[in-house]
Length: 121
Image (cartoon, rainbow, N blue to C red; front, top):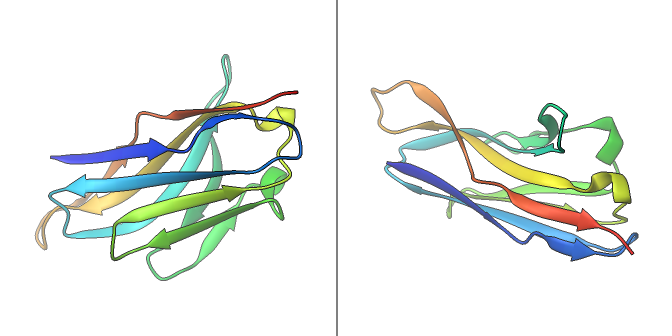
């Protein structure tokens, strides 16, 4: 069993900051990509940022320069530091991870349950 749990969401004023955390736990042999996505009602889930196990990162154009993704591979965690938040950043944020449960298993994609981020005055 593998579980991803996000935390750190909440209500913040425009221009404010938040830090999201996501912890992967359970039967984990290795984790490849870990990422953050977000979704608003009526829209498809969109990529926010992704980080490889080797430290490579990629960001959506809309968050470049404002969001920073980082990982702690020793703790199987991924973080999203968000600054200069805008009302359009309001969404449910989900983390995901490409996880191998043993040396012989395939890699599967797992998702967290999501955490709400609301940017409003």
